Image (tube, rainbow, N blue to C red):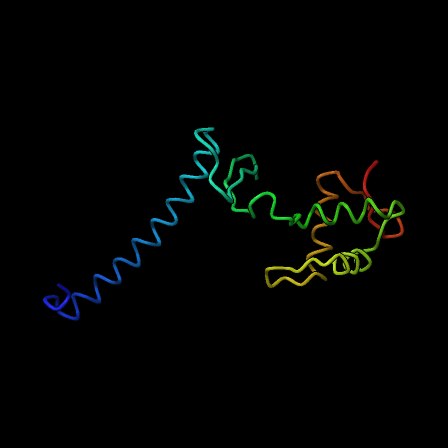
Length: 137
């Protein structure tokens, strides 16, 4: 059947098919997020709801039970193990030692201090006078 279709039309059809496949994938993710927000059916793998700036947003995540902990949880656990607190460079070294491998381009030397600042801002961590960060007790 493909022999009857001109090459230019075939290329256009293949391009359109590729576009539709991408849209279908995007719609499947959006549907899973909506189902989760509305509480309809079982959540489809890899979607969770988070609150950001007073609005609900669906976000992709690793399926539960995958053995991975989030970066923020890892930083919290490290700070919990050091009640006197850690400087950002010390916390970075501990994160590296724990085996965390960043998936993005941002280096841990930047990511760890940013996360510590966020934790201070939400009130879970305090910065001491000597520049160390520790969990609020």
